[in-house]
Every structure is written in structure tokens, then in C-alpha cells.
Length: 460
Ligand SMILES: [Zn+2]
Image (cartoon, rainbow, N blue to C red):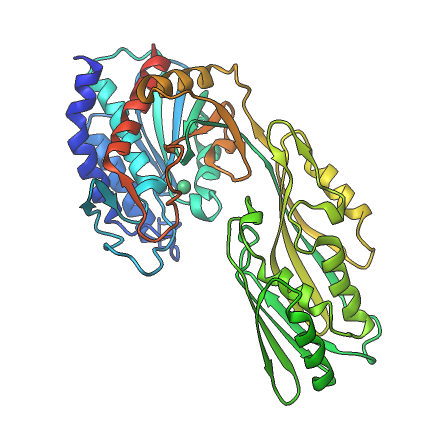
């Protein structure tokens, strides 16, 4: 059968399958026996594998961590890396988040574009080629993960227990082709307030943020001392700090609430960091030396800047752009503070280099701890996989394909010769993790076509 015909015959079934799998609420939950990420993710995985089996594809379930559907022969294997877990739905939906309803040419639901729609499109691309009777000289494997949103333990498990693809792509970001992902560095500054605490205000607590990879949208501080003086210092500074604050005067302390705007840590400049805005405001309070050193450090070395300039790490390169820095969490009481930082550093740098520079620019009292480093990922443009992705993208969309880099992380970074590819087309809104997430039916079909042509090129 002609490939175009095989694709068209599969469109309706793809639509149904996408709706059906959206109905499974595959949010990570407490583990159950044989279900390491809870019931939902395991159910979604089994739905996909059963569907693949019904197409006559070979399948494997790796203990409900991950699974795959495969077709073809050959030593080399092309991997399409997708995930079936979703983030919680949140509130305020126009259409039910777990119904897979179609309205105005869009399938609505949590996971529609991230990443269930693309996962189903990948599976149907494989089916379309099989239906068309194409001979496979390489195997194609759609690899389903179930823990992408909370640490990708699924793919780490897969790599420990199964074969790594020769090359592949992950439809879990944007078109055209993302061949570079910045390095990711997470660490904490830890300080004990051992210095003088008697003359000046006392910082009872400063808290904000939940995750290193998000810009905190809320922070709160409690300050004790001469309440009237502190209150006056805060109020006179409020107009010069670009934040949104609420100040509450109690009998023995002042509580300051800071409201910011959340954003992903890979683009911290798009958010307003509630912690750092609050630190800036607190910079006007006359604290005892122990606290003053801490607040001073935050403002002088980081402040509202997101490029790492104050810490001497405002690196950039020509392929992936500037380093970004996000203060993700601050946890501080009267005695100690812990500040969790997430940095995305350019591809041409090394994590050790970044840490070394930070250490040089940090007073000794601030210990750098809990360092975790994920190396940058980069696939050169002359790589075979990129050539084929470019071909298929241009053939189906009529648009020019090009490569770019991002600060975020996809499954692609865990595999050699793998890049992120789609599903979101340039100019379309970013709907992953948003209320009213959807995928346009037409875009779902376009994804199916693109993947089918990519695979067709790769298996020849
Ligand atoms: Zn995703």
C-alpha cells in the first residue's frame, strides 16, 4: 500500500486512541506492588502496550517503569522516546481534563500535547509503515516512559535493563529540531548564623519555593526586633523594590509576604522571583551582622539577575546562548539557611568549571553542598538522524527545518544520537502543563505524517 494511504487510514484510530489514553489519569502517585509510580502511569503504559500488541507489534513491559513497541529487523535500532505520565491537572478547566473531548478541532485534556498525543502519533507512524508493507532494515522501537515529569527514573531503569537505541528522537518539546540541551547544575549554599545577633533585627525565617527547577511565586519572611523601626525601614523601601508585598505587623514580629510570578528554571528571566524580591526588600532592614551578611550575600551576588554575573559565571556560547541561574528554594530559620540554586550552563562549558568560579566568588562561610550535575547534550548537525528529521519536517510542513538549543531537559539527553523533535510547531502557544491543554487534531495528524516519513527514511 502507498504510505500516504496507510497514514490516512490510521488517522481516525489515532484520534480515538489519543482520547482514550487521556482518560487515564496518569499522575505520579504512591507506589503500589509492581507499580513503581502508582496506578495511573502503569495503566497508561498497559493501554499503549495492549494497543501495540493488537497491531501485531512486538512489545515489552519493563516492570511498569517503561515499555516498548517494536517492529522490523536489523542490528541497529531507532528509538522514539515518549512519556505517558502527566503533571496534575490543576484547576480552572473549560473542558474536563480527563475526558479527551474534541471541541473546535482540538482534543482537550491533560497530556494531549505533553506527551500522550505525540506518543500515540509515534505508535501509529510505526503501524502505518507496517501497514504499507515497507521493509525495515533497522528496527524501530517506540519507548514509553512513565516518570518523565518527576525525574525520569523510568528511562534510567530502561537503560539499566534494555538496549539503548542507535539513534532516535523525543517528540516532547518543539519543532524544528533541538540538538542541544544545556548542562544542568543544582546545588545549595548553606550557612550557619554564628555571628553577632544582638544589635539589630533578627531574621526569624525566610522561606519560599518548592522545586529547584521553578521560579518561586511566593515567599515569606518573619523579622523580630524593634517593630516600629523595622516597619518604617520596610515601608520606606517598598516603593523602590519592584515586587508585590504584604506587610503585617504583629506584637513581636513583622511578617512580610512576597508575591512573584512562576516560570520554568530554564527561562528564569520570564518569571519574578518572590524570594529574591523579598531579599531585596529585606536589604533595607538593619539586621544584626549574622543576618546582614546573609541578606547582603543574596543581594550582592545574585539579586534579581538571572545570568550568574555576581557569582562570576555569566558564561555564554554561540550554540546555546547564556547561562541562566534560578534561586529555586530558600529555607532559613534563626540559626541557619539553605539556598537551592538551579543553573543551566552553555554546552561548551563544564559543570566543574561553573562550580569552581562560584566557589571563588563566594565567602567561605557559605558552603556549597549537594551538587548535582547533568552534562550538556549536543548532537552535531551532520548526524544522520538530523539529516532525516530535516527532510521529513520540510517535506510535510513546507517550512525550513533548522536546529536550536534549549535550557530544558528532555529524554533525548539520556541517549546518544538523540534529539528533541516536536510536537509543538513554531508560533503555536506552549500548552504543556497549562490549564486547558490541547492538541489541534490537524497538528496531531501532521505529527503522524512527519514521524512516518522520518521512519520511512531511516529504515530503508
Ligand atoms: Zn513532556
